[in-house]
Image 1 (cartoon, rainbow, N blue to C red):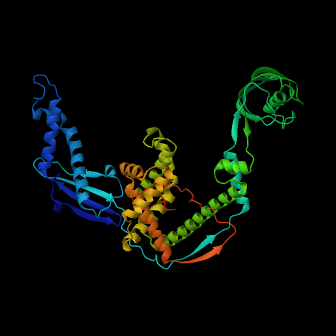
Image 2 (image 1 turned 90 degrees about the vertical axis):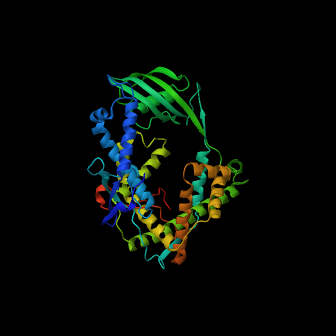
Image 3 (image 1 turned 180 degrees about the vertical axis):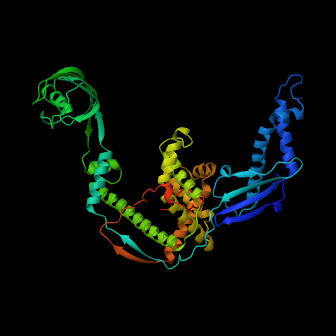
Amino acid sequence: MQFNVEGFTIENINPIQIRIQGLVPWKEVEKKFDETYREISKNMRFRGFRKGKVPRQMLEKMFSKHVETDLLQELTREALVEFLRLKESIRPADNPREWKVTPGEFVKGQDLPFSSELELIPEVEPQGYEGLKATRLTAPVKEQSIDEELERLVQRNTRVNSIENTTLAAGTHVQLNVMGKLGDEPVSLENQNVTVPASAVPADDSHLARVAAVLFGFHLPEVPYENEISIPAFEDHPEGRVLVEITKAFTHEKPELDDDFAKETGRGDTLAQLRESVGKDIAEELKNRSETLLERELLKQIVEANPFDLGQGLIRRQAEMKVDQILMQLGVDPENEAFLETKKTLAKNYFAKAEKEIRENLLLEGIAKRENVEISDEALENKLKELADRSNKSVERIKADYTRDGKLEGIRYMLRMEKTIDLIKGKATITEEKVDELPALQEEEPQPEETHDHECGPDCDHDHH
């Protein structure tokens, strides 16, 4: 679209909102209307006229109201998009499809006026990020932590063995359905999960326990996988008759925690070597958590020292992106209309976290800009190689995947933010403190949308820590 940039004006409504007024040249308006009516004429059949030969005046009489409304919106939006493409210093907070454009009065032969109010991503000039004071907490690897992780390894490697048409020994896990009557009271239990007890004495006098007592005790050797059985009187409960259907039965084969198990995990030839490997993993996790806690403390100080206005729409957009990520991880299409209300509710609960992330990201961007922090192509290649090694793919494949999905610059952005955080740590006074146990990485408590009266940060969808 051709237009005169000088015909546009920008008015600052507040630090994070502007009003743009502009003109769409008449020749562009006329061209669009001509193209549209030619397209309508091609497909229009009207009595007395051949296809494609209906007079323009007649088409305008029939369709002008609808055509005019749609085309004016389309023309003014295109002009706004093109204008902002040329004005790189203006950073709208919303996607172009969310911009609200108001066309002015349409007069044939005259340029078309329009206006639009846009929320902006604020430009931040960070202060007070040098000479910060913080504490790096360190904690030892506890033998109890190693034992707990080894037990989790054993659980993950425990085999499930299905059982069919055989005696159900003590310890067997059973899923069953029970239907019938106990006295005058009906029994209808579906998909009940029980474990065959070592004793025939039930743990309580519930219906299921009474059935289990008979099934697993008195009749165990003879009861097939589907059988109608009599329930004798039990304490003060009446007798009855039920149909028992066992739908699933299985046992857990738990491996012994020994040298053979260590070899199966591929992390050592002996149990001692496995313990050492697990201890190293825990030490690495503690180190990473320690750095994350330190970074959060430094970023908290920077955020507190640099208050600035944020738009509510930007916070909402960041929260919605978080919810979309969660839905995609669950295999749910975020655009599915059936989940729209659920998305809105979930997004409200992410507002506090979204605002925190955007404030941190904007401040880190500002610091990176002031300190000229850049990521070289070599550093980007090294990161791609790391990702390739982790996923057992070639660097070329990883690079192609990220380029195709438009995520390559996102990797560069992430590296730039990490490098900026390292710069902040390098300028800070950090003391070391040994503690018995590191604090957990707590997330913010969800807060409803109504508690916020401001807006948020950059166009990214990741956390730095």
